Each structure stands twice: as structure tokens, then as C-alpha cells.
Length: 244
Ligand SMILES: CC(=O)[C@@H](O)[C@H](O)COP(=O)(O)O
Ligand SMILES: NCC(=O)COP(=O)(O)O
Image 1 (tube, rainbow, N blue to C red):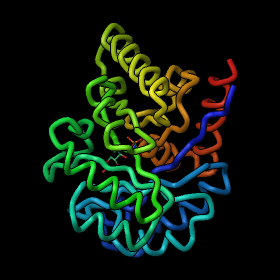
Image 2 (image 1 turned 90 degrees about the vertical axis):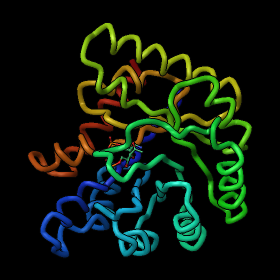
Image 3 (image 1 turned 180 degrees about the vertical axis):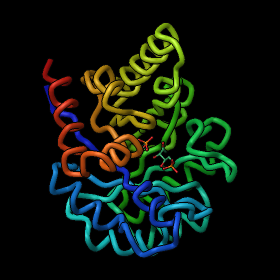
Image 4 (image 1 turned 60 degrees about the vertical axis):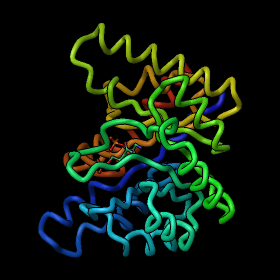
């Protein structure tokens, strides 16, 4: 069975920096440590409100990341222009609401089919591999396929936030069905949001999943155990789950 890959989101290293407006900690430094510890890629989310990752971080990490950059952006002219200039290996199109604490749901590809299709075409023409951050919904998966984006990232937030075992199991089955459906339709399937050391195993065990993007939980663990150990521990849990 294929190994599952781990993308480390370093947004919340930047959150710590922005809290005091200092030059440290530098997400570019964290990305290098994460790569040394076994990260297969680095994810950064350049939000329109620049609450954590700054434009400077994107341009610096475009030069320093040794694995590959997955740049998360909203579907706006400004962000598409930055992405086409930087040319990361991957761009993941995500929804954004100014007032949200964190991403609250997947892209509504169905309702924005033309706009998202045009964005996928523009990014693809720039040589970028495009992923769409969507819920595990067959209608959204069909709409994502119609945009010709080669990747999707299934939003695992509802699974992570579930308040009962029955709710979490229902969300897990919904994700499983969506992952299998997308994979059967020739889409490369990633997943992420809200995953941590105690809920990642059932997701990592899904053989159709190519990569998990995980940030907040790993950066939080790094505050206690250090980033290298936090990354190695997560990678080990994921690989053991996949091989179980
Ligand atoms: C799209 C997603 O789930 C995350 O990658 C995103 O970065 C969350 O936003 P914050 O990092 O601002 O919490
Ligand atoms: N796309 C998910 C991601 O990059 C990290 O999300 P989280 O682990 O910070 O919730």
C-alpha cells in the first residue's frame, strides 16, 4: 500500500510572530525544520487579511522550501496574481470569510463553477497543480472534476469538531465515501483541517488519500515538545496507521 504524505502548515508560527509584530519566529525557519524532520511539503495560507502569513513569507519560502510549497489562497484576482508570479508547485483554492476564526467549510464549487474553472485554467497555464478545498459531498466532487483541477482536499473539520462518537463516526463515513468517490473518478485526494494526534489515524488509514495537510495541532505540540519531534511523531502515527 502506498505511503501517505504529510504537508505541514506553518501558518501558526506566523500567528505567534504577528502577536507582537516581531521578526520571529520565522515560518521559513519552521518550514526548514519541518522538512528536516520528514515533512513531504509545506503549506501556507496567504489570507486576504494577512492575519498570519505575510506576502514576504511567500516570496522567501518560494526560495527556501526544499520539498514543495502548497499555497492556499482565496479565489480573488489579487491572490491569483500573486500565485502566478510565485509559481508554487501547488495552489489550493480555499473559501475565506473575514470574520472567521479559521476555515469553516469547503469551497462552494457548484455555485461558483465558472469563476473557479477560470481560476483553475489560469493557475494551470502558469504550470501550477491546483487543488480545491471542498467538503466530502458528491455534488461538489463532480463540480470539482468539471473544473479539471487534478487534486481536491477534503475538509475534515466537521469530523474533527464532532461532539459525540456517533457524530464523528457519521462524519468519518461521509469522508470515506467522498474520498472513494473522488478517487474512483480519477482525482488525487488530499485531506486536512483540524486533524491532530488523536483523530488522524482513521483518516490516514484511507488508502485512497495521497496527502494530509496538518498545521495547528503540530505547531501546538511543537510549543511543548519542539517542532522536529512534533513532525516526526505525526508522520510515524500516519505511516503506522497506513500500514496497519
Ligand atoms: C484550509 C484549511 O483548512 C487550512 O489550511 C487553513 O489554513 C485554515 O486557516 P488558518 O490557518 O487561518 O486557521
Ligand atoms: N488545509 C489544512 C491545513 O493546511 C492545516 O489545517 P489545520 O491542521 O491547521 O487545521
